[in-house]
Image (cartoon, rainbow, N blue to C red; front, top):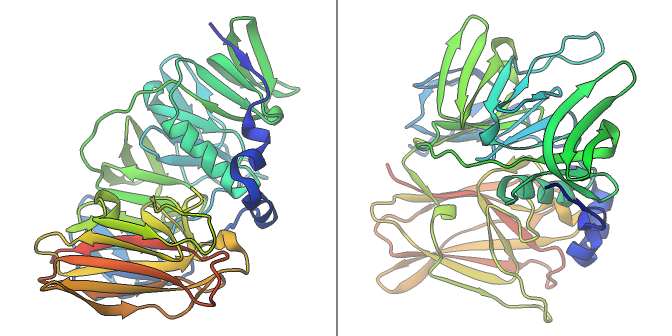
Length: 419
C-alpha cells in the first residue's frame, strides 16, 4: 500500500542543522572544478603532476606528461567535481551518474544520450542498470550543499519497503514508481499509491528513492569522477572504438571515448594502502572551547557533509574539529602515512587551524610533521609522515587564532602506504 507523508523535514533544513543553516544557505553549492594540473600520488612517494587523463584500461591509466601508471603503483589523482545540473542516477554502492533523464521499467533503469543543439553532449552513452541496484534518482540538485548531501545519504542508506518520491514542498509520496514520461505539454513522474495513480510534474519533484538491494561485489578496480559531478566505482573496463564499457555495481555504463578529458578524479582500489576509513582509532578526545563537543566523522565532515576542500571533494577522509586528538595503531609493515589537509569550505571566510602529526616509537610520541596555518581560502596541503617501525600515529588539531569558530578540518584520503 502507498502512503503520503506530509510535513517532512526536507523543506525545514534549519530544524536538523540549527545555527549552521545560515552559513550553508549563503554559501550555496561550491562548484569547484579541479585545476588543470594535479599531483599523481604514487606508491613510491614520487608525485609528478598531470593535467589530464589520456586513457584508462584494466592495467592502469595513461596520464598526460607522465605516461602509463599501473593500478598497483598509483594511489589517487585530482579531486571530484560538484554535481550542479542534470539528473543523477544513484546506485546502491554510492556510484552516481549525471546525465539526461532516463526511463524506469519493472526490471531496469536506462539512460540514452540526447543530442540537441541546446544540450551539451553527455559524457555517457547508453546506460542500463538493474532496478534492484538502483538506489534512487535525483531529478535536480539542491542549491543548499548540506541538504543535497543529506539527500544522497538518504537515497543510498535509507531503508523503505516502498519507493519514495520527495517533493519540492517537503512532502513524500510512497508507493511504486512506474513511469517518468513526457508528452507535448509536460514531463510527469508517476507513482502508484494506495489512493490510486499519482502523476507529479517534474518541476515539483526533487528525487525518487527506490527499493533496492546491495549487490555484493569484490573490491572495485578504481573510482572515477567526471567534471559533470559523476562519481562511479568501476569493477572492470574495456576500451573500444566508441568509448569505454565500464562495469559498475549491478550495471554497465558507457563512457564516450571523446569525453575522456572530462575525468577529473581517479582513485585506485588496488594500491597497497590502508585508509583511516577502514580503521578504528585507538583513542579520540575533543576539548570544547565552551560546551559544544564535536565527534570525529568517517568519510564525512564534522557537519556530516562530504569531505571537501577548495579543490573539490573526495570519497574518503576523516572530519575533525579543533581542539582534538585522535590516534591510530600503525599497521604492520606500513612505511608512510599520507594525506591532504584542508579547512572545510562550509566555514566561508572563517576558520583557521594547525594540524600536527606525532609518531610513537619505543613508548614516546615525537612530532614528525605539522601543517602551516590552514585557512578556508587556501588549497589543501599534502604531506607524508615516515611511520616505518612505529607503533601509533597521533593527529592533533589546534585552533590557530585562539578561537575555534569554523575550525573544521578535513583529512583528505588519509592512508598508510605499504611499499
